[in-house]
Image (cartoon, rainbow, N blue to C red; front, side, top):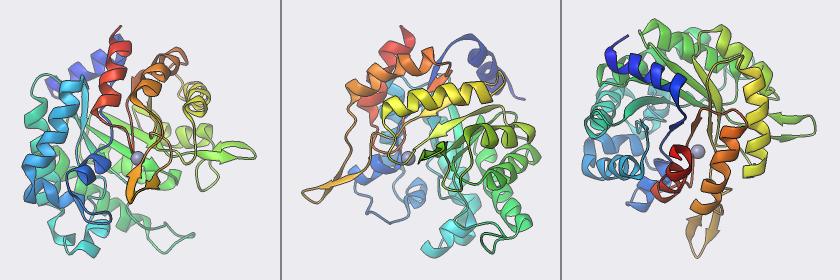
Amino acid sequence: MNARTALLRQELARRPLLCDGATGTQLQLLGLAPGACGELWAVDHPERLQQVHQAYLSAGADLLTTNTFGGTAGVLGPHGAGGRVRELNAAAARLARRIAGERAWVLGDVGPFGGMLEPLGESLPDDVAAAFREQITALLEGGADAILVETMSDPAEAVLAVAAAKACGAALVFVTFTFQQSPRGYRTMLGTSAAEALAAVLAAGADVVGANCGTALSLADYERLTAELVAAAHGHPVIVQPNAGSPKLVDGKICYDESAAQFAEAAPRFLAAGARIVGGCCGSTPAHIAAMAKLVRG
Ligand SMILES: [Zn+2]
């Protein structure tokens, strides 16, 4: 473990940390067309990506997330960039690392691989594991301090990503699942509970666990979900990154409901419920993170 990652581990034990907010929706504000490949911006528009990272750093984020959510070969492939995994992920990590300097840590972001594992789908575990290793190798090469596996629905997929991160030498691995309401409580799209999801990734060696970007979850839902996650985390730090409500189309523009003030009001409740890291997902902005920073630091 390098010195910076070791310091992150220490700080996690010492104080609540603030993660950044959404990258994708911020890039859309800077001109990324919906459905276009944002990962290409690490190379095509580094100055705009830099602007997003810088805004979150200035807002007070302790953790910056690389712009590599769709950075596996299978997700980049349809954009004609399946052969550019190493280039794009390493470039994105280098860019975030340069902005973070000694003021923040960089989480190398890993999203879903874009398909379904067998038997639900046709993807083979060995192939998916290799795709995650290819991406994570490049993120670490570019200087990511830890790996964040996020927006997971299938614990089997999350386990493959955690194992890949460990195999690549990541000293600190975060995993977040995406939950929704169900008659039996909060579940992933595949029906997995928080307890089941966390047990699977903790057994695989995840260090920090939690939730991000739920479907139709209010901030009050996230508070209740946080308590479930904390109970299931067995002492591991819990990270909670709510989306700012559900996207709505208003006058041709995508809008999100939850304001920075609402996020700021919710942050202390997440911490009181036991979360150790808070941040935001889709629709959250530097204003949301700045508003939370006052309360997380206070
Ligand atoms: Zn999101």
